[in-house]
Image (cartoon, rainbow, N blue to C red):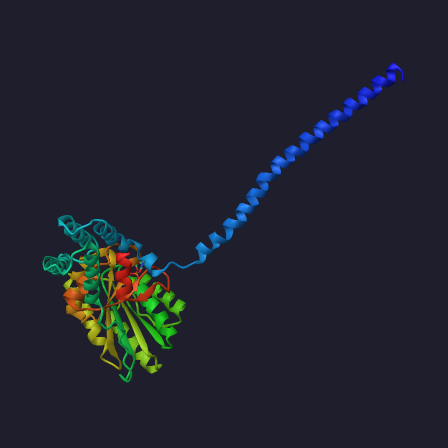
Length: 357
Ligand SMILES: Nc1nc2c(ncn2[C@@H]2O[C@H](COP(=O)(O)OP(=O)(O)OP(=O)(O)O)[C@@H](O)[C@H]2O)c(=O)[nH]1
Ligand SMILES: [Mg+2]
């Protein structure tokens, strides 16, 4: 082998070494890039189904009462965290009950009864105290009939009137009630007794379409009594079971508008049919002011039940206790959102459990 052949072999070996080296570097880089890609893919696969499950799962009643719960559950935890019942216990419970807006009178009567039992050594531990408070609150609400009154054989349709202050949720609740009653097999006609604003009739028409109810509307600025009377006549001639009558929002302190509502109720029954429910719609976020509303509206229209709306966004669900214990009006329905299914029958034990847990 001569020198030039040897140098050619070295050159070939050097080139082969270089090619091998480059190959190793490229492959290892590709491998390095491939690892995180596989990890990302696996990560997405794991996350996706969980995300979907969260997105489609409807919120439970308990979840939607999170705000109402927040006013009492913290104090309950703190009372239970102490080894004994002392002054701080009473202070904390009183503050929490007032925060939940049960009202001063209800709070004092609940705590007064418990203090007597603690003094008599019937209750000795914080856990017994909380249980007793819960039982006392339950017993104030259970046993009341919360059925929506529907009477057969009244010679015409049943008439349910929605009343309340501006923006409380009358029209929305009426729409939701229509959907529920239609699902129960009843035929429903809506009477657009809010002639105050043109938009009110439009809003009710949308709910009529959504729920499958019929609707009777009047002219803007017309007499609401006349529109509701026409609605009842029309329902009677078509053999419709139930007239849901909307009314314009009004302040309970406005004498003229309250007088108008008195007339609406009177005229509604002039033809065939009977007013079997007057539902006062109260926005839960208004708290104790709701009590004043309930007094005045009841005086004008003999309210038979309360629809407590927007409890999904309120820490003041305690108004239920004030309305029921001080005025004896049952809370029949609770609004927990803006869509058609977000109106439920009021269940006191479920509500109290949600407040305490
Ligand atoms: N979050 C929540 N919003 C609600 C509920 N009920 C009603 N609303 C909303 O409250 C607002 C007022 O509702 P309406 O039904 O128009 O109230 P209204 O009492 O008819 O109002 P007026 O006719 O103007 O007096 C709307 O935006 C509704 O979607 C509820 O239970 N929860
Ligand atoms: Mg309205």
